[in-house]
Image (cartoon, rainbow, N blue to C red; front, top):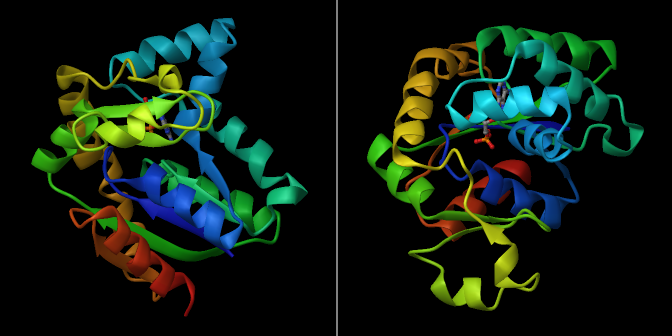
Length: 213
Ligand code: AMP
């Protein structure tokens, strides 16, 4: 079954997705990561995406949908996808239903990590992501883990869009554009809300509880 991890930027979707990948042998489909990969390729599309992301704006639905389709149609990931950062608006939610139905798949669980703006700001301002393994750490809370990171601490980089002004813009966009997507899922029996302000391990245990039912 496929899973949607939903929540504001900085809710911990990427961190929790990595735990699910390891424990339940899943594939993390982070649209943010796919877009950043495109930026690294320095193509004209990559340049366009970079301008949008670094200003806290969304990439176009067409771009994101095309990247998404590639993964959904990959047989290796069939029914084992965690959607992280998608859908981000109601149109994308409807598109996801259509693509999944087309390939005879569905969503088994939608998990909403709910966190306040204050917490999001603190987490994002300290966030560092490994450009090799995609692990996310926080420069304020994980000093020792950063020093001991297996890929080497030089691979831990701050994201360009993790600065205060862009974080505020991204949170505002989430409230206006992304939060309404909750109405699309919250009445389904497979919808679960989890307090994303809890400790990482506590959240992970709750998610495992939901997935093992
Ligand atoms: P994330 O890594 O999920 O925080 O995403 C980083 C940035 O990538 C977002 O702020 C958007 O600019 C862009 N992005 C990620 N996912 C989407 C999406 N589903 N639709 C449009 N833009 C997206």
